[in-house]
Image (cartoon, rainbow, N blue to C red; front, side):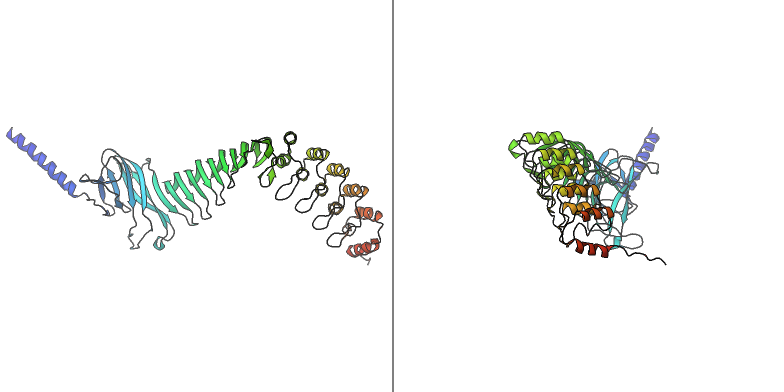
Length: 458
């Protein structure tokens, strides 16, 4: 019995000695102390920052260098590590202006080794980021759920703050681009993916479901002036069903195609504001004309829309807008409703000039049946007849001359319709036959000078 008891005592004594030896090999961690590479730190803790062994229960932010392995005692740990610059084996000092904090969920029984990924000239204050690699108990690499929080600065000046995986932004984070644009939200493989918000430097804000770096799906677009769109997006542009809310409370609900309205209706909080300007100098009626929605045009007229209020910026009237967008039926409808057929754009074009430019014979004829100023000039002095000649549109030239177009009138450059028709024999003869002015001889002389030289037979 005594011998057995002595044996037990010897075994226990050996275990204690072994434990003491083992403990003496541990690296004692103190506040502000840095571990040396390739040393093992035995740590534990239920929550918060790393604890300094079991000896000091104070939660400390431990400074680690690359190459340090952290072995976890049994239990689940949420760990934060502040990784600081170090001196590499070649003696080059690697430093950064900011410490890098890594936060991750750790699993007992696995080792986590700190390593670095970076780019640029570190010695001159280049960018770098820290990463953790997981090592299984048997020493092989393994895939475990490790989420790292990093700060990365790219070569073009782009900054990223947030979660990373394998050195690539993944999870939740924030991008700040050199031009002032910002994004915050979910990220996959370095691109915005999932719920997020994008702020452009000009004040425009995108919020919603992102895919491949752009809004795709449901989202909200808010402009600096308060205008907003809520609905479906495709590649960052309103596309599909949506609602446009204007600053005066007016709503447009309908279908959008590549950012433009194609079909829908307006909800007006007060009929008295039907003629208010909404966005980009457009009224609700101008938008309806732009879309070519005849039903919406009629509805707005019935509640008091003014059919002559032009766009605040380019001064296009509803009639000019319809002609320019090839909405012939609505243009003819507005002419019958008494739209101003002599109203000018910013460039001093009349609806007739636009119809001539667009080669819209049907609308031009409808305008000529009214009390139109057929010889009105735009900024460069050209009339509708000049535009028809420049377009080489014989039918339009005939229509205009029959309705009294002046064939002797001159533009700001001193040219007449005849002098610019020299490269089109039919139009030249047509204008010539209708020119009874004393300036005909002068124009003919100028026209002859512009004709190509006659080749002589050898």
